[in-house]
Length: 117
Image 1 (cartoon, rainbow, N blue to C red):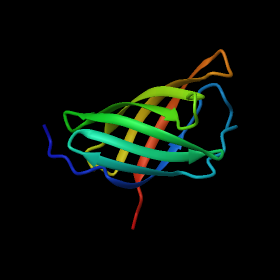
Image 2: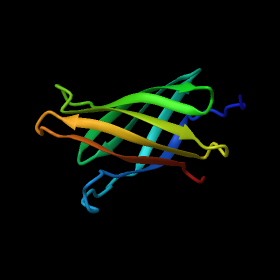
Image 3: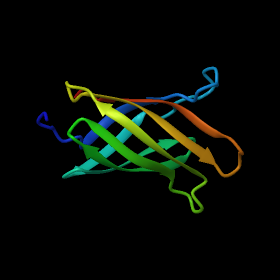
Image 4: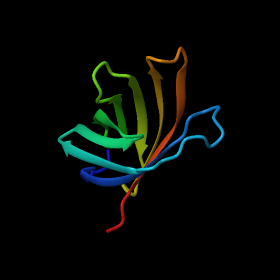
């Protein structure tokens, strides 16, 4: 098991929706993470909505968690799993989720890169 560095801080994220040809516009790529022990909470913004992340680090190499729309009723909700790369500056994973207004479950890639200071 490798030594872990805290994932707390600002990250740049890029997520895609499978089966959609570049229709997602990331108007705010910033992802803010806070880590305490193996627990992670975070937030990001998309289309004037705030999304919350709750996750857990496993074996200092993987992250498993959920994400949801902060708006009442959890309009958007899903789960994700990702691998923390050896350099601990990149996280690569996949997400799955649904919207209450659509009858389809979507999936896609989700990549994080630690912001350069």
